[in-house]
Length: 226
Image (spheres, rainbow, N blue to C red):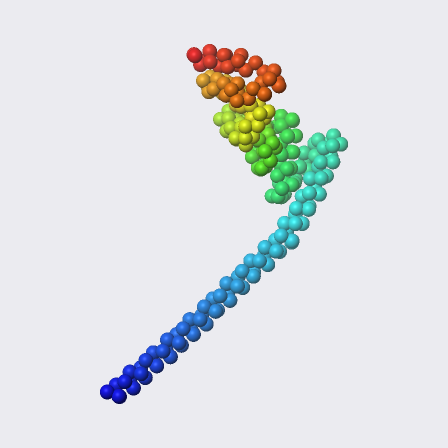
């Protein structure tokens, strides 16, 4: 009986040793794995720092310098030179100054009647500002109206209306542009609905600009057969 207990104890001890050895091997393997992860993270951090200080910041400063040159040219009345430089910044960079360059280039191109090019710049422009953002979408809609791309114009005006967030002076202006496009498309019932909404929700706008919204509402309703 004693021999059986000794053998059993020996076997148990061997099992424990084997288990400990296996655990140690696993820990060593995990340690190597963790070290590789730490090395990879360190490399990513170095790449990020290198990008920020080696590429992004110098590019940002370069874009600022170039767009500043274009701004000065515009102030001096050199619109063609300014347009050329705005387009260079817009094409060469993908940062905040480049975004503004897209907008400025679009405005100058629109004034020259180059609506297709202006629209392309506006499509690449992004703004979170509650005034400039909707205004840029409104200008995009104007480009599409001139190009007779009415569905795209409506989409742009809808975006301008949404982004302007019920501003009493700007939202109804964008709505009127949308109504004009709907009239062109002979969608008179939808046009009338917009005039009714302006009348109900934006009396300040109609009073300030002395707009006889009832006249346009009656016309749209009559054309819609109401």
